[in-house]
Image (tube, rainbow over the protein chains, first blue to last red):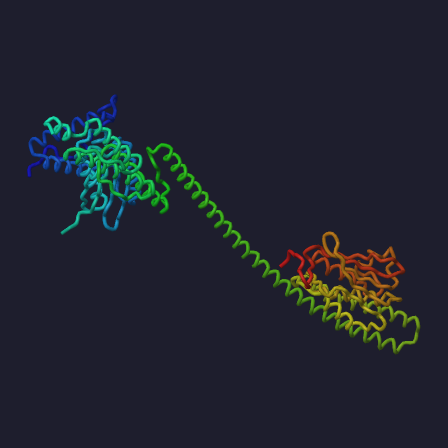
Length: 174
Length: 387
């Protein structure tokens, strides 16, 4: 394959101190959502709903993997890993991560995210929208454990719930 | 019947009546848990929607009840504003349950965020637990160090004690050998003095020999005394019943017309193993110096702070000027060591002795035993502090 233009690397986040000495690192949530949902719109028009969701999921996985490597760090016990992830997401105003269930033996977890950046406050749409977050969690867990996971959002603000709930299951090999 | 009349009979319920019935049913479900009044008459489509609302309200109530009773794993299939916030409560409770398990496993860095007063209380509790744990760990460390120091000290003391015992043994052995040798030589000396007395007739020389004999005998008594004094305080004090000690006195002396009376059968004293020497010497003194002695009485009386044990006789008594002197070494007509030894033996366990009799009427020796140094064997045992 020929070299790609947009292959992701963490340094694409740039030097924010140098780049934004006055405006700083934060940006309004509306601007973030404006970009995301316009992307979804165009992707769906061009490729269809299912493909658009798949693209968002895969993008989320890249983000989760890179976030683990550059923000969380390796070698943590599970409760320390969770704690660091909670603190990081909270400090970056991404959401409030909580743990409902952990079954290390069977590779089954349930996480919740309150005040999720993608969906909190959105109107009820009768479908879950946090596809990118699903991928983010899947990428994060794979980077931490070395095993592949399937993540599904079962409750979302857009389905009428007030907290996003994700089931995280180790991918069964056939 | 006219068409008009037929039309009136077939007319559906008034819409206001239907609205009222719908609201009544909903209110009943919300307040009482189920609709008790007749359900409103609705067309098929609206009836389906109405029953759906009733079903969702019922599901919300059941879910709320489950949460209230601590069952936080129930599933709520419906979505919406109220369902969403109830499920948020459930999610928070599940997360708190997980955090509680983490804390129980020792992770005291867990904190609760964005739950108002509950966050404050919970986090304060965990921080207090952390402080407590740190303090306990610090105390454990201090105790461990103190324990180690104590163990080292005990070892040092044991070493010192062993060394002391060793020295003591050597000194005792030396004293025994030296005493034995001196006594042997004294025996030889007294023997020759005796033989010399038989050969001499000059009164002056005989007087010199008698003085020499007295001096040699005195030396002999002093040496004998060292054997007894050497044993003083060497052995650990023990509990000793007085009854058998007194009974032994009656066997050790040729009492003749003298009687020994005692009411000490059930009393035990915590004293040096040489305690029997105390009573032997007291009886010996009474018999030796009592002159008009007919009776020696041993009795005991509780006093403030302890017990007063008395040895009283009807002999000639002790002159006022000698009441304290008699306990000094070398004072007395015999060896001058008996009462000195008595006081020394008693002092090992904190007992004191004094002579309080009336001169001319008999001697009265009072031994004060502090609380904790005596006990009674019959009936209830008086509280003691020693083991």
